[in-house]
Length: 404
Image (cartoon, rainbow, N blue to C red; front, top):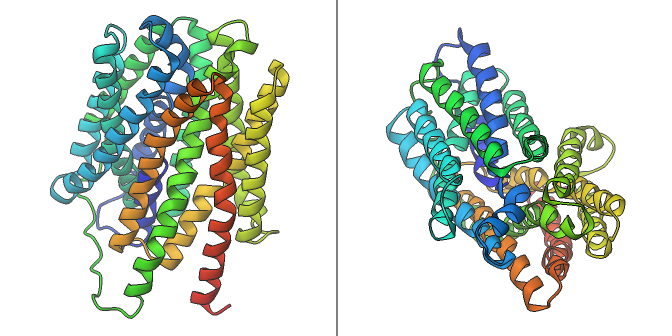
């Protein structure tokens, strides 16, 4: 998942004044949004479990199939930028309906399209995700002015349930067509709900930034460091999760059982995200961030050499648990050092989407060039090694800026 647009929206909403929108329909909308996020979580992580099946269906090399990550996440990044424009001019409902409609169109089209048009279907639902996800985050936050952080956390927990559910649903259906048809049906329900549910009417106005602040210069100097860190965090998350089933396939009986690798990654990813606030009671952000990077590195390295299904599942679980806390902790730094409304923050978050569009396809290309598919995991492993000095530098900057 490209997490950047979602969590950026959450931070922006926390910085806004309370909305005057009535909350009398709040529980109904929040529950609907969580249910819709489960479905959108399946769509966001769709390529992970179905990539081996698409490769066979379309008679293409796995490297070609890996380029679908680029189509999805580049389109998603563009959708996020468009979503910001739409929310400035139109209602939340408009952005959500358009986004979910595009998701439905793209997913349903995959049932019949071949490779030449299938990539455009992936781009279609990617653009829809980029449009809908930030709008839903902001809508839920605005409808919960007294508990914004809790409501957005619950919403993204539901997204995590969807990420896990995709592989489970594919295994249960045991057919790519049946899986896509069922997912399309769930999106139809989401689209109907988006049109009839009590969605807030207007997006919140952007907070006005005071120009000429003394901190402006050093914020722009800091931005490349944060942007590159986001590029790596989001890219590594999507590279490992996206290729888990495909790289595990030789050790499993078929593509459907190989989805267990994807399920293991997202299950422990979600568990680690849920446990991170508790861990922060006992460890500093810097220590937890370092520990998570090291754990992720151990998991990715183990996955590179794992041969049996059990060791593969353990490696994916370690990688998921290690990668999970990193991005939220980085967002905390962004909020503290830059602020949610500074233009540099928007640029940094866009690099997260670029990471998701770039690293997963490169994993496939490197594996093909070296004639060893798992050799592509060297890229996320190198990225994790780079993150150690990058995050340490961010910690030093944070201490300097706060005077601690």
